[in-house]
Image 1 (cartoon, rainbow, N blue to C red):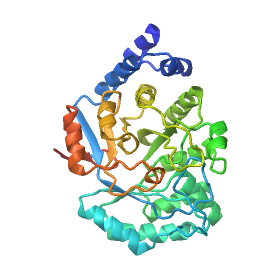
Image 2 (image 1 turned 60 degrees about the horizontal axis):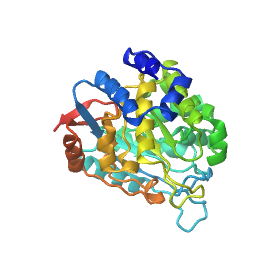
Image 3 (image 1 turned 45 degrees about the vertical axis):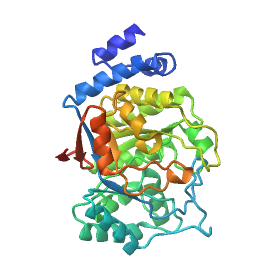
Image 4 (image 1 turned 30 degrees about the vertical axis):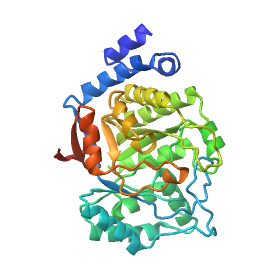
Length: 353
């Protein structure tokens, strides 16, 4: 273990086998110390950032039917919905009124929504709200739009960008190992499909983020493989601005089981910071972990607390309903001994507190 520690302290990249040893054998606090050192090296100013955003879930109709998801509905379910343009714009207006800068619009894989629907909506959003960053969809949604519309991925991403899509979040990554994906989300795109959309977005100059949902059915080896695949995508010209690991929430899901422990969350977070030293920002997931664990995460590699999320419905459907205001976010950061700053999607500082 000393040789691994020395490599990390010297700024050298560890390999998959060494990362697996850290995950399965190393002491939590030792891994946390290594991650915290990298965080301080990359972000020496002692600032923790957040974005004021809203997650608008435009539909809950989804053909993917992932076993870990409590949000989706069949198209003919009594509580299935598709928001109209005016309702979506009303939600964005509320976001703007609270000083928000980021729209995170995500939904299900709707069988009837082609690219025309999104182009009309995104053009209207851009016209009405020119200061809002449209950080929306996911690789799975982009792929669904392409399939419904009979288009190539490259053409789909290009047209969405021209219509007003500014950046693509990394939702739907789960674990980027197809054997795991076949078990928990067999009808969703494989890991190479996810990567294809992200490569195309980067080629067009669009910022992206990457995520990982862990604690469901993956092995430690799968988790490590996910991290290295994200790292290698970034090395190959990726545009990931941040990485967000979060834990599977089993409530109300077909998959069921137990969620990862706090110790497991912190170790995975720390390992993410160690392996992904070519991605500037690591977000702590207060949405799934709660505010107090998010504070602790700031000493295990995280430098960002994500969004205030004026609205969030997907994780909430699994019974996880942590909420936080902008004022509470600032106090949370200060309480951990850091300076708080509101940022944009692209990590430009809007203001410090």
